[in-house]
Image 1 (cartoon, rainbow, N blue to C red):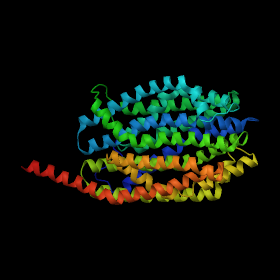
Image 2: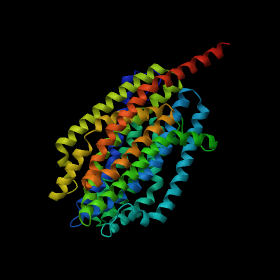
Image 3: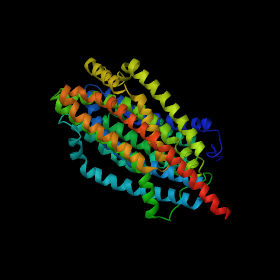
Image 4: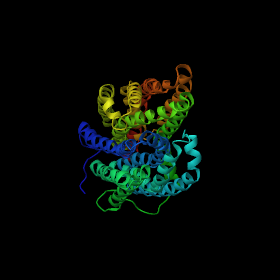
Amino acid sequence: MQLENDLGHDRIRTLVMRLAIPSMVAQFVSVLYSIVDRMYIGNIAEVGELALAGVGICGPVVTLISSFSALVGFGGAPLLSIRMGEKNDRAAREVVANSFMMLAILGVTLTAVSFLLKSRLLRWFGASEIIFPYADRYISIYLTGTVFALFSSGMNQFIICQGFAKVGMKSVLLGAFLNLVLDPVFIFAFHMGVAGGALATVISQAASAAFVIKVLLGDKIPVKITFGKYSWGVCRQILKLGFSPFVIIAFDNILIITMNMVLQAYGGPGRGDMLVTCATIMQSFMLIVTMPLGGITAGTQSILGYNYGAKRVKRVRQAEKEILKLTVLFTAVMMAAAQTVSRYFVLIFTRNPEYVAMSVKAIRISTLMIVPLAFQYTFVDGFTGMGIAGAAISLSFFRKALFFLVVLTLPAAIGAEGVFWTEPIIDLTAAAVSTTFYLTYSGRILKKRLLEGKGHDLKRRR
């Protein structure tokens, strides 16, 4: 397998596009796992809206599983890039070996714990008596594929960060294609309803996981999966770097839970379930924004990590600028789409006029400040890519803490629909803080790294 991209020498703008676009497309396609399920489930005769609300309640569990794959994948991949930039092949192999081991342990543990707590969790997440059966049916099957979900998402990052972005994209395309084909078969042809959607997802994730592991066990990729050389020190480094993306995704999980609980509390009987359904549709649209956006910034972390490890500060700065341009362009396009054609997106899920009107309103409000969100993603993931975990974690925590403050206070002042104004408020504020922090401290961090490089060179001459 010929190397697709030379992280240390290829032109930065070209390199960013080569890595960002496939990663963005891969994340966009991965959204289809949930979007396609919700699309078909929302159109089940007579019970579509209730079934869709039930799947929406399962969203936090699905997101929680994704957060653990990010903990290892988004933590280990930048570390691998840094080790490759340092030309430390032994340490690079240890990163992949320890990451694979951790994902296997997490997969088994999360499956067992989730099955024990699923009923209690679903009710805590906002499942009413009416929608609980749909949520329980979906999640009971989905959880059987937890190990596949972790391997397909987490280990795919180790393909992308070694310069094989197109191969990483193929693994996601494989799963999405299978999901698209199997969903209508299981849901409608076999009359399995929400259970059919979950089964289609599990099979699709298993196929993606098999593809990813096969690639990483092959001889043509520079750093493949090996066994042994397990080290708590290496695991700790991976977990430290991965903690920021883990916090972002895991707290998004709590975000959804809190939002559903607030909507049920302030919406009241009947209307609460309707608002949860509309919020599920809105969150589906937001996934189309945030997942590809994260694909751009996570997919290009290898450029930052490799050149930071190689002490090529100028290339790090150039890469950050090109990444920011791309994220701003993407979010601007998505904001325009949200304000003009979101109705067509909502009609995929439901034809109920009341649900359509409320869902469109929720999407238009929630996306008002997604352009500033591009700055948040670029700078936070940029710090993670360079191994500056402390800065990334602090900025992530600030955004999540602000969310809780707004989502718990705004509906009390203006009603249940005030929940939808939470997103633009925190997007704008968090972006301003992240940008200020980056402009203040990034120069000092890169200058220190450059001086470290000169110090090492001086020692060698002596």
